Image 1 (cartoon, rainbow, N blue to C red):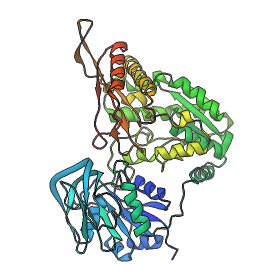
Image 2 (cartoon, rainbow, N blue to C red):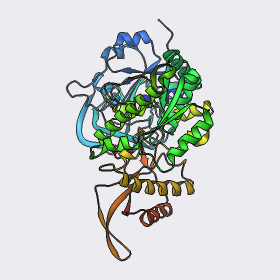
Image 3 (cartoon, helix red, strand yellow):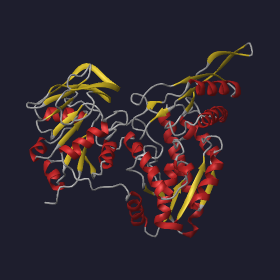
Image 4 (spheres, helix red, strand yellow):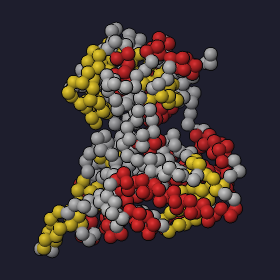
Length: 516
């Protein structure tokens, strides 16, 4: 049997499974995600130092709900349960999980009981991030209840030596204020995991994997101007050099000035071979009359691929192009239903939106990474700060920030409003404080206003500033009132057909960052 090595993160369909794995790695402990169907024999073969059970969208008592092989608990491996994993552990060990009629979502105040090993040296009261409808109503025999909330009597429990422990909340997310300390304490001080893993080799590993996958074949990369596609392209360029041609598709759904920025800044910083395709008419014609958000995403994904296929034909004189590079991140994958039991939140243009008759083999060097990790890799590869720290912008662009049909006129309205918001946020020095600030045009909504002593019937604009670390959870950013005032005043003064600016103050969950 191999020496004990790392942590297995058992995925019950969590939106956060990869985030848990990353948090483990931040403690310098190796982690690996495995499906909930894993057997005790398969666990034994991997011989992990510890196991973490992830959250998930199911109820443990529901028919066909994912469960853990009870024999795993007989392997004498330390196990830590999170949310659904906490409930699955309770059920497997003889506890009771019930629908209490009380749900908890978002920030919640936690009270810690004295004597807990898991919460050792941490405050007795702390804010945590909850996302559950069911609850453990009876802990397994021999386990101590170590924390509670106003609506959840058993918010954490642990065995006498704490090698079997669990919490109802999500310690892995940024908004659980002592979450990482909890995980580190359990992994290092209780489970005694080896702290020998570091993330410094991510770029090297991905370059080697890409070189092996591509070989001597030609490859194209869709470049959007964002950090994801930029880092993906930089990795592939390091791997295969001139075999790479980057393709920038101007689909008409970008923000003001972005097309010019892409063509100027990225080429200047990397020297990569860039082909530009003007596909504005192609995309807008395909989106004509479409209002359903899922249909929009799938159309945009399809037209992207068609554009790449056209580009490949145009550059194929030097040899057939077999591979397409995409800057797909793990949040895109899991939200598109890419995990065991994972709910399909929305189809991302580069995951769920890909057509069935795709002509390329995909190369996705960032598929297992989160945004902050991508930025670290970009710094490792020497990309400039203005690219690395650009606020996230979705591949479908403004097409999913217009509620209603996407038209040229509506795009111009939204571009103007978005440009003002970005300009004022930058002037206020808030670029690094907020994760991103989608600006949404409610194109199918009109409201009464008054301008110049006359009645108007214009569109509302929604500001959606959020704070996040990884896009898996988010909280609305507390923008100073004076900044909001400047943005609102300028938009309603300078942008035609807009007479109202509103602020979205919803966390994720329950809302997503984008509106569509």
